[in-house]
Image (tube, rainbow over all chains, first blue to last red; front, side, top):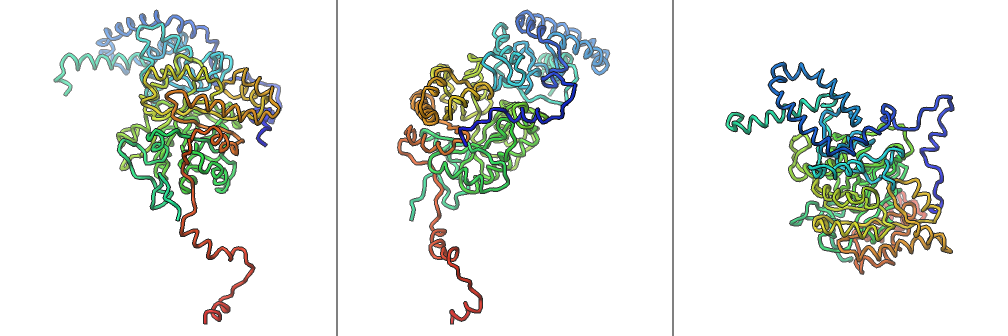
Length: 196
Length: 363
């Protein structure tokens, strides 16, 4: 019994047993169906150092505008900022709007594009050519993340263990959250007694 | 009277062992590894049935040859008896199961509940895995969960054990005492990241690791060299995954269909050239064990003999990795034996005792 390995997988049998129809959708995961090619994403990873530099300037600019955000109200600016953030990051990184961006720790390769949404490193199923186990034609997000992180100044941030995704933060602006958090941290640093 | 075995609770085989200083679990595997003995673990092929005897029979063939048995959690995304269920049965019989937890099927609420349930049943070892994608299995239409990943799962259980808290911060009255494991695949890209990635897993809480099938010893040696240089082998017990290949055809099938298993051409050529491919596959496995056991930092082997479980004992025996040591084995208790001796005849003799007759013979 042991030397008789099945030559067709169970998945193939399941697929074969499905009712025949003229409409055959592309044989990719649902996640890939909403996504175009990943050329832009790969460009971003190749230029991770440039983007890292740009991002830190951009974060500083956002932090400078903290009084403005606070004046208008973070709740009120959320919708327009999110609108821009979703489109910009969506174009550059195929962003999935998890709301807790870790791009700077993952070599500018968005880990939410991994079919298993791994945020701490590759799984054991990466193909020998560096492609994904689930999507044979897609380069593994984490192989690219490792390459991207090697170009970055703070690339070793890839070594920090990330907390599990907080699903309740999906579809919120990571830019505003980071800005508000660093503004709060700056305030406590300036007058440590006030927060206590 | 049989001599009391090492690593067994005298009050009952199903009970946890006494806790030792420096040990996080009350299980047998951690004791074996911390004593510095070369450990052997294996994998139980989970049955597609609701009969507990199926599990017991599959575990019985490993008796006296392995230190712990992996209870797989729907490996390859194929549906089988759950790992919690298998662990419940195995701990009843005194075995030391390693409960595998895959992130594919359960979210953080279910996983933390299973960790408590497993630990309460006496599971001392837990192995945190990401899990294969659902596309690989028999139910590709299932919803992939992947709420946690293997790293955050490790950290979650470590927080439960060491801080006595759920991920949410809510307190546990009794934290689970478990020995935490992770999987490593040194044979998949990105190769230079893999040893560093293992370090990340150690930081998250891994205490032992089992590798993917090793068929390429030079590649494994390079990985171990890097792991040693990073100081990982002092913080973690690394068990090298090995297993027999049934034939060259199987090897080719595995290579092209099972993600993450690297089989070099030389291995396939060696199998093809053999008269008895199955025997050669077993011999190849023993040869690999003999090579990897000499690599510094390797604390044991994990024998995965899928559908060739009957070979595990032979492989362990012929490779001599146990060096004469006998792992825990289930034995019939003395009192059970006496009862069996005195009353065994009632199972075989064809006598029908009626109560009237029994009263008559008693007077």
